[in-house]
Image (cartoon, rainbow, N blue to C red; front, side, top):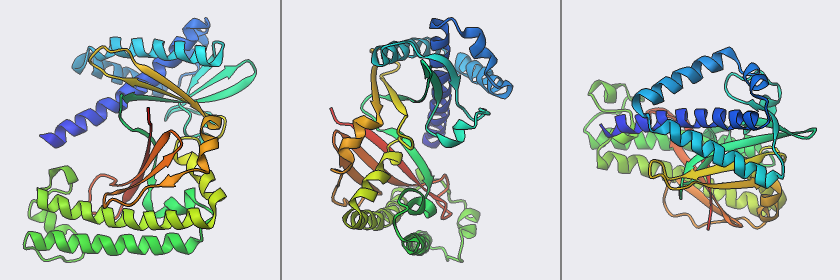
Length: 326
């Protein structure tokens, strides 16, 4: 039941974020008398998905629509205050976008014009006091992709460690339940045990957590050494993990307390806000958990080890998230 509730919440979070992006763009277009042009930029498949999401919300969570309409207006008002003028020509950058620039600026959920300048906007709708997800990717290419100054052999040795630790975890889980480990989780599944972390008993979950923590500990060591060996390269690598793969991104985060009705808080950040702190990043001491934690000026960055979905494969992801310390 808990797992079903988690899945439901994850689905609604995805739907909520998608509708929020559309409503922010629509509000910008409405204020600029560009609604017709805006609607004409929308892909037919995107409109179909959007209508399905709208129906889902109306059926299962009707109070969410007034909330989304209000926070989208609040967000646009705050953007206009920050930019000093109303953005023009909004375009939603989603899964169905045909724009070539989307391949270059993955963080952009919205493109607007400020006079003749194209401004990519990253939009986040987030619970107050919660971390904001900024980047997610596969663990076996993490260092190659985001810390390119490191030797390729570091990623290769790390991948070998992941495989070895996976085998150790698998043996420990099977032994806990008096099962023989035959090189995969076939027997585990056959005996009716779950492949989802949230459905494990506490002892099994502890083994799984220890497995992810051992991987995070090696990540902590690699990142600490990388910062010592190449401070400039390390500092430059942090920005994409915090949602600034391109320096022109405007990051807009709407923090809410839905369904309490409390007014949202809207934070806006640019790369220049972040840049001056990157060289001062401090990696926290390892605390035997599945993440590496950094303090970067007023920001906290968490680099967390997580399963893609099922824990029974070596398909692990790295999830990055940030929080601004008040």
